[in-house]
Image (cartoon, rainbow, N blue to C red; front, side, top):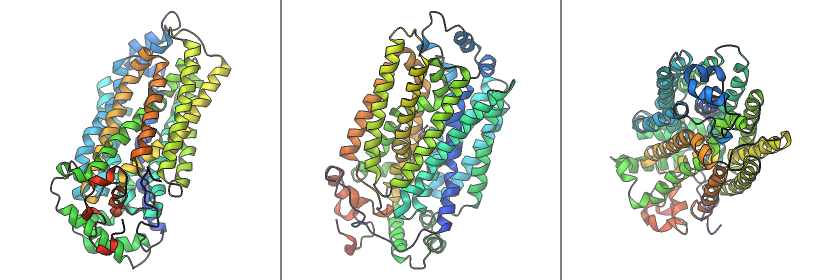
Length: 514
Ligand code: BGC
């Protein structure tokens, strides 16, 4: 793969060891961190489409929506900045929290960050469930955001460090899998609570405490990663842990690479300044662009606002929530595809195929909406066309779910050397959260102003990001995490940034095969 510049598994180093039940269980438990993230993504769209919730907290939107059937454009009936702030405030909080989480994760370990994330999220959920005014709602959401900032900063790194290289993709995608299960659970809860006469929204919001409890209790019992133990000077414990997770006493090679990587890492006092050095340029650029692109696929238009979108398309209240359940289910199952193939066929194939599939669907939905609503926004979808739109949206969600969804978290968590890993992951989380915020905040206005063009807008971005992957994202499948520099070194574009002595952090000349 000349353009991708990947190195094959054969070139990469293979360490001794097998996949132990211990490491699988630890990764499954850690991955539950994705549940809180997912529950949250899935719950707000449904809640903001519930009449009782709107009437209580956003009466203006409620009135506007009820009157929208006349001359008011379908495209604009939900536009309201306070309402979108309810959804998106969380992501601003997560963005800021991820920077604090970086220091915590580096100094005190991955496990502590996960525990903090779970506890703060729990408090947020309680506040939301008990909300009697908009302030309580927003403060609750900010706390949920802090929890997510901590969890998303630490869980992907934890998974990538615990996993043996051969299975790193699959185990890391456990995070995304839990995210999609969280979204789906939230869709189902919304469907159920929307049938309640009163306080359905309250139950929806309060139930966020359930995934938070699962994650917090899980995190308390988790062991820390060998990488993090070494980073904190606990070498003996680290070796024992490595032996335990790899199921062999012969972990000498991997252990000494981890120690070497950590020695380089210890010399770095200011990871934030270090990551700006030219030799980290490939990681920095990719870590900034991948989360940006992930959000510009437009996925959260569906995840946050599916019920609203389907209502806009003329589905009845119930059918709208049901359609969100359907897209949620597709999201879960398609993620499994990714788990099965990511370590076999690699990241690039998924990125490229997923991109093309998403683009085709976006064009289809754009054309469909244009043909029914036109520019004026007046019109009604027939049942058949409504179902066609739903089908296209499902195919689009499936493509995202096996490509940019999981890979958006996997790739940035596996490309950084240890000294900048926490900082790199924080950049990943914060860029992701920032653009999640932007889309969350702007989508309803964008729909109102760009109309069907919105789908072409996201389609254009998908085209661009697919080309970017083709030329600039190398294959990282099967490459040990502390050996990643080899991948950059042989890449047609990034190679020039990597000094010779950075290849094979172990500094053992025998390791140099690039
Ligand atoms: C993204 C979220 C998105 C979710 C959908 C995640 O990878 O970061 O923004 O809502 O996937 O499954």
